[in-house]
Length: 238
Image 1 (cartoon, rainbow, N blue to C red):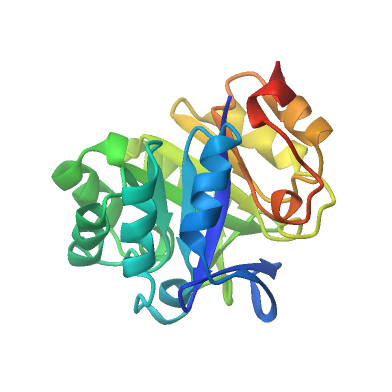
Image 2 (image 1 turned 60 degrees about the vertical axis):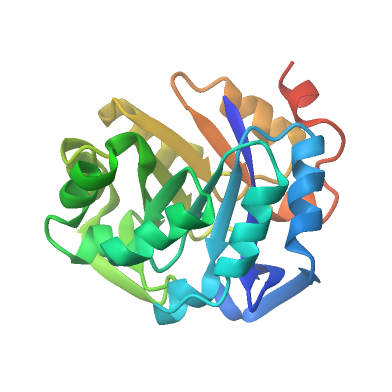
């Protein structure tokens, strides 16, 4: 199982939100490159970058930070937030990321995932499914749709996406543990890579995730920034 520390960007700063609420923001640093280098040194396999400004408004304010992060580390980076057009996806790749994460666009623009997989390659396209009570939330989690998370995951897989990232909104940033039941449900229907996001609170959570059959990876956020998970990440799973 690969480990992907999260770097959430807002106005060029590293922040974390509770349950995705911009009103519940903690600013950790004005130096995202410093954190990127730290997580790489601590054994990260990938970095999971999120452009929160773009997620909320559709307009990026963080591409320069993304570019500097990608240039500073040797491990691959993925970027989500505001990936709602081919031009924005191309700009992300031009900034140096290895994979983009489609969220709102995957749910609300018919055929978008299939088109982007055809243009850029399915291995470079992930679909981020942010779920609340099994339903997909969009636009920085400000709107909940009637679309089932499992239905969107299956459609994304059919459309060629190589990776699904499942985030449980209720647990994200709450340090209460991942939603293991929902992850099991996703794993039972998918053949593509599944990455878990939200709720990781301890090394024990990571070890439990690593024992889930076929789970490809786990994104770690607040538990790293608050010091609940420390030391080399790879030794946690060994």
